[in-house]
Length: 352
Image 1 (cartoon, rainbow, N blue to C red):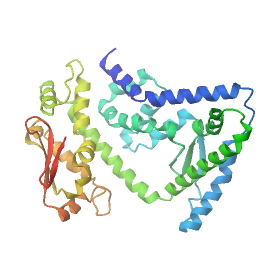
Image 2: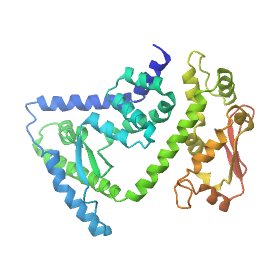
Image 3: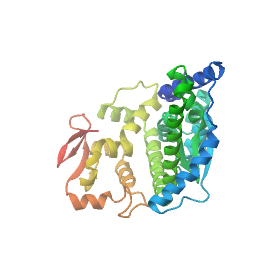
Image 4: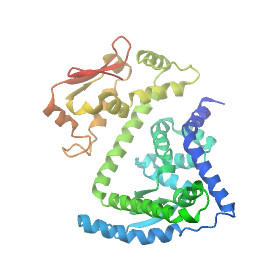
């Protein structure tokens, strides 16, 4: 098996817990269906939700005085379609849209060959968007619903068998426990629909964040391309300088993937700057790292100030002005004897 195929396998391996849970749920649902002793019946998911939907909408209106979107509707998706829908929640440029959809489709099918083909076609996009696939799909078995584009999508795979599995696991006699499980089931559906109806009210914020994420993903793609294009000598030197785990030379993509995940702006802002990010007025990259990746500082600065979010009310773009108002302390990535650390004169050191 080549390096690219191993990459594809690794992505599915990271989803193995979720995949195994899905398999167990499906097998248990089939077992319940075949068990003649299990005779209790729950109302159909669609019938329950159609009754709950207007009730929750009315409560929202009474509580906050805002009506839900008149076009808002319920959709019921099976497992694969729900996973593909989660892919549509990954906001990307038009150029990357087809790639993202195909990646989520391949992961939903657990198709190693198709995933490998996508990696070969555009490894930079894979490095950026495979993280979304892992994050979104790894939570499918605990995700009851989601809002997207004027629709609330309900996870039929989970919700369609949820009450039967809960009741079945409690053991016979099933009839005596039916009402309790039914009540809990209806409560879960109410909370799911209510939560997603509230999300639907935040359309303006949603649109603002969507544009920000599209720009950030484009910046991450740019960095991934730069790192993937590093020559072997630079990649090896940078790996050693950052004290990353050595990767054999016959796995060049994996070596550069390690560098990307270490140096990508998300890791830098979240893992390095951390909760004190607003106290920093300046970001400086270790000159040695800048020498090997000259555009890294520009990418970090672009990441913290997306072009359409440079106003004081944006989620990330306002950090620079806030930092200047709170501190004069610069933040710099430096190596400290090859140890890869970040230094902030006002705070303790953090590992890069």
